[in-house]
Image 1 (cartoon, one colour):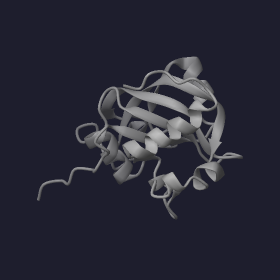
Image 2 (cartoon, one colour):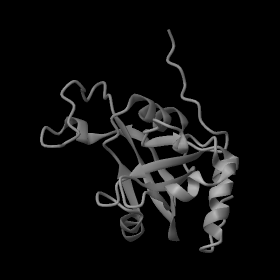
Image 3 (cartoon, helix red, strand yellow):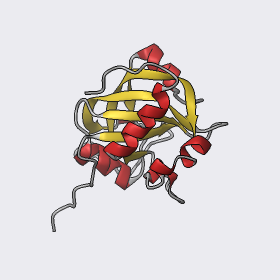
Length: 170
């Protein structure tokens, strides 16, 4: 049986979550790029493997924060490749069941695009009727990597543009 491809938004638009005390949008702005390692959910891994393309835009979400919310934009700058933390016994992300000949876990590379002048809080996002179907806002949705529809992405950028000038996203 063939592996099912992960469904993605046609425009290659994503939301990725990071705890700001681990790696914030300010850290990405400072460093310019980062690897997105440590993903240990098969659906999220499949989105990175089967859906993400170079140049795809990413809403950078601060999770487990006070408040949680969208902090800025990133861009996929490197396609899925084996996550080396799965092979490192000293890593919190070590997976003794994964092998270098058949790696179980992948990572992508992200590049900095924009830090919003202020966070778009989860409460604010929930109050927007236009975002009611956004996966992030669905009960029980905990994926760290998820597709975003073009309409939802545009609405979020519209909310952010009232706060900060955005670069061209074409």
